[in-house]
Length: 154
Image 1 (cartoon, helix red, strand yellow):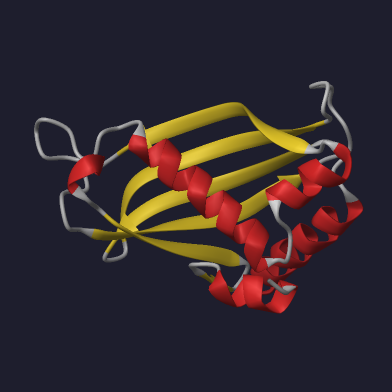
Image 2 (cartoon, rainbow, N blue to C red):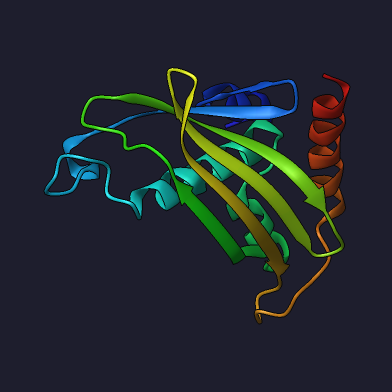
């Protein structure tokens, strides 16, 4: 698949420096009370972060295949405010907050009809195949900086 086709196939959209990723809540996402199981929000956030990378033309698998570059979650703070339920359509809004030499800080908010359900603040570390910290690849840094700049202008 070409880079353009990959971007077009990636779910979600970019708007004002923000990536918006839609998710339908299925039965498998819920717990015994019929609410989204708390840990599934972390999965939703991971999917959204993967799709934001695709939207800017970068695939995790390509980075890893090229030189072993990968990402790990170093820190995650989650504030659960309201639950999502079966059949809800929610959106995960992802904003890149800060880039440093080997890390990405992001804010992710799960929303339903514009109302915050879950707010997450994450720090991702860039590592090599041996698990050692490395600098962010320049192509990724440039793409994410352009997103930050776009969000700062709005």
